[in-house]
Length: 423
Image (cartoon, rainbow, N blue to C red; front, side):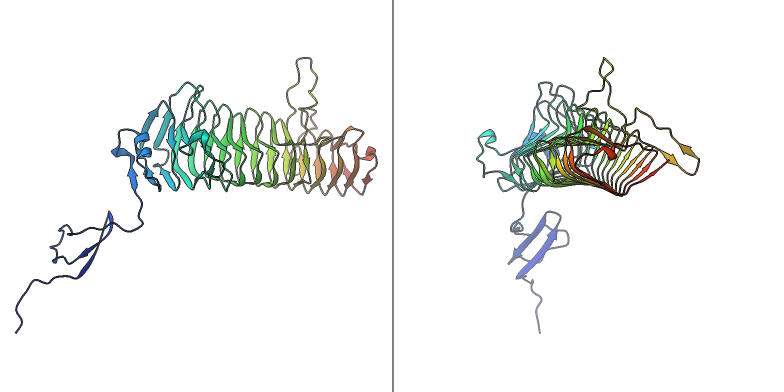
């Protein structure tokens, strides 16, 4: 006959909201009772609720050396000095645009700065790694600095971040060399560049929106930019400006209503493909100032307007890029499968007259080794303009010119193949 005794449990694993704990040698617990001996899940890192701190900076400073998560609740949080993140393996996460960090600083300081704790004294190989900022809004004013500034941070990931109304750049990445990723972000109304990439490598910029910054995007002294699926609208300067960068792709972007040019390649650009972009209503199309071994293919250049004239009524030649300018310091360019067009909708429904204020087709300025084939030029002031007779070694063939006069027959030291010219 057995007697009733209390059962001693050798091991009970309890699961709660705060994690997993192990209870050893404890008596059986009543329902809802607190377990006797908690041991935190091995390897777990801290999650910080910023609402429990006196300031956002205090919450950032509470991150341990090994990193962790800071969750910022909904609300508007005014700051007058930069919030600084100085740990690796960190996630800063808001509650969407309901989390609003408002920079009221008027001395040119940034809102959120991600940098090594040693600041400017950091060694070249001693950088922060793996920092993510997600789902929040950062605004400034005309006298504030940049919105989000990251300095020497590898594998930086920005997602769902809105940056607006800053006196500097919206987002500025300074030598964030390894694998920066920026996607699903909104950069608007910043006095300088929406996204400024300096000295970065293997860069992904995808599915973002840019509106009414000075320029939309800069990529200087970098490598391997993948710029895809972005919408860039209403900028006061240029759309995309790339310098001293190679091995990159600019594809599937909408670049519209920039007062300046859609895409600019200058200062030793090499091996860049610009494909399947729509470049519409800008002050110019693609300007290849110093570009080599590049491809311009399957883009649509539509209704590009001439840049503003000087006070004496002349057109500054350095700004007159037309739809595509290939300048004297550029060479070995393939131009194929593009549409350079005014407007024609339906059979007799709408046909715009050729307008001298529209940007036209291609301008060649003393360039060399350029192939132009399989393009359509329709109702533009001039399909191809030979601005400098020193241009040489050019191929112009298998293009369709509809209501588009052209200088292609005048190309020196070149091959002009079969082209179809219609009225």
